[in-house]
Image 1 (cartoon, one colour):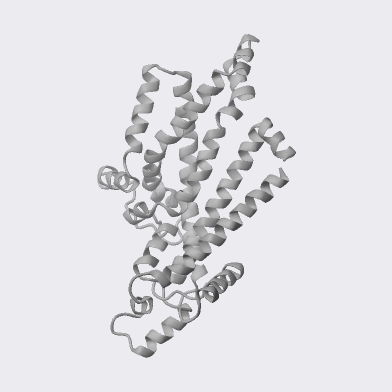
Image 2 (cartoon, one colour; image 1 turned 90 degrees about the vertical axis):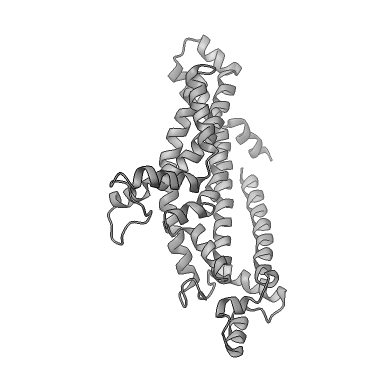
Length: 320
């Protein structure tokens, strides 16, 4: 197991190194003059030279890469140029990460039990009208983009019902219940998109486990359905679901840009999009790298959980 973790961490470091190279090249290969985009079309030559120097564009690409690596190791990306002029970049990123963590955490608390329950029901009611109804509803909802689902919920819930809030962010100093109330519609939009996908993965894993020899043997021994599921099926059936959730966690943090725009929610995705539109490369670099690290940690954690759930995988990892 330790060797497996070390291998995965080394692979993550290689991926991060490649991403560092790509992020370093962004201002160098972007069309136009990055300094003019930041300083404005009427900026003086002195101001343009100052911004160019601040971006490090006068240095070689290798020097820029080394400077960015130092920024990653020290968590110091300097100050923002245009997203929030003069504010430390990491302060903006930490604030956005905290906002995204609240949305993602609440979304997972809703998505995981509902989607897994739907998948289990369809597996136990395979080929019945219940199975077909839940799966077809899930497929239909999965075809709707998250921002379209958000607009739909705003139009049909937030406008006629005062309980649902238009903005995802609660007022400063709001209590927990008020914050949850503001996040309900974004969470429902994410649920609409993910329910069908996770339910189908859970259904497939459960059907495979139910058709296995060990499950049939357990039923022949006279065990109840609850006992068979708890002792023999759950760990094997839910392994694909855990793997899928791990890979989707990175998207939930950084990929819900349109949904955050719809609800005016200041998460990481919104921060990265704002940085792109305003050519704020320090904020862009820090935001992209933060999402990449979260994605790599999430997939590693999912692999470890799957290994814990499967004794054979755990044994093979221990031997390697």
